Image (tube, rainbow, N blue to C red; front, side):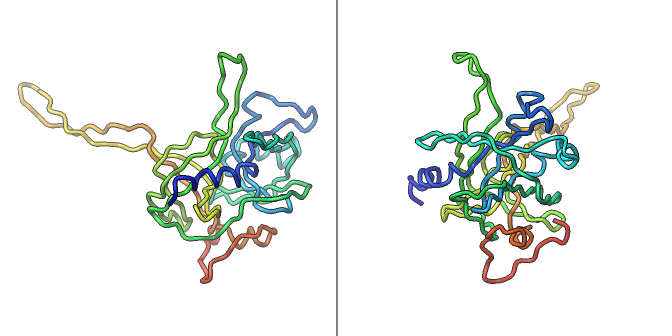
Length: 258
């Protein structure tokens, strides 16, 4: 690994990462400021396909299906790349157990982040791009939203109810949910979905009724890890929808209910 590997990932792919928002179908306006940034999505084809985490949209899912709410993406890029105005996308398919949602715009695009149904390797370095939750800048007197790149190592890979996940050794803020997990080879193999807190059991010596006793106390530690869902869980389904996922030379089984 070279020190500039992550610079190259940022330069090549940050223009394909968007914030996810939702507006009322009738008024085309936001209900709250938080509706402008529900999470992160990224382009996965030149035909207008995007991926995000399903839980980013879960609260709005019924309204979207009923046509009461409209999903939109907006690219706040910077670093010499012009930002893009918001544009509408359709919700094509959801894979609830894998926490993945497939979106599609009505316009073709130039460029995307290549995806691969690759196996996760603990110890491998990856990067993710996303939009942390908005914050208020007191000096500028307004709400700010910036894209961030985070480097991390895959610390573990595991299967839960037949669905494959990886754990990263870094904490990602909630706004990163839906962002791509990109290998140093330039392939998105997963997307960020959640975080997990750790715990530590401590023995404490207490005086009870004149007797010294040892009691076990569990302390909850700060957020330590981020989790990501593997694209291999839904690779064949994404390919049927037109997403050019790179498949492995040998077939990897997918859960029947992803």
